[in-house]
Image (cartoon, rainbow, N blue to C red; front, side, top):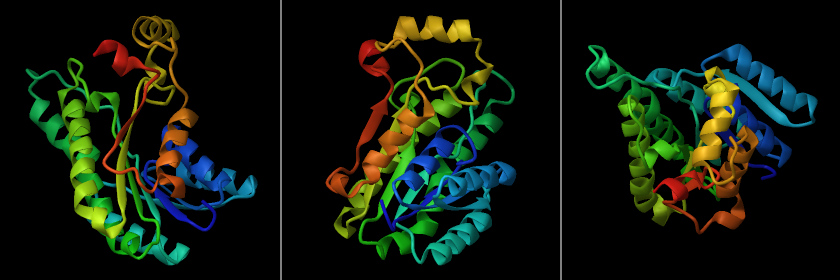
Length: 249
């Protein structure tokens, strides 16, 4: 990835942080963006301390104006843009019969699906000028299945896969690949609130590898889809879930 410019949303922690470090280790120039600017700065500083090239930006992906401005600044900083990783998100849940469900659904779709179209639209002119344009969207195993009481999240993550597939067809003749990565149960800040004993029980019951994954394992899936050697892969939803989906479908 030497010489490639990579923009990652939600890169201040978890999967985004691991992805930023991995791309930097492979020689990319990494734009670390996050709603929490102090977290983004910390990751960029970690990368710099390790000998990598990174810069931090504050970015709320639900703010159309901010998305356009940051993508433009990143492209100017990097003299272009080659890879867009749409990773920003949050855990969103509400039972269908709760009074706040429609509000939760509206917010979930905006954050987890519509925001991807904002970043893609802003990045597209720059990706078109790249010799190896890549768009990688982080979905979830919820994008190919479903769980109770998180319908807003599940619907949005299904939408991410649909968006990925449609854009793969739409942008294919321009040489831009569009893929998704679908993490299973991963040790991140979102899952840190789950007691360890419950994680162990869940993994042993539902995951063939009998454990939660690590953010770095998702990052390697993302990197794989960005590599020059993966230029013939597009429209794919890569499951990185320890075999959970296979076992439970």
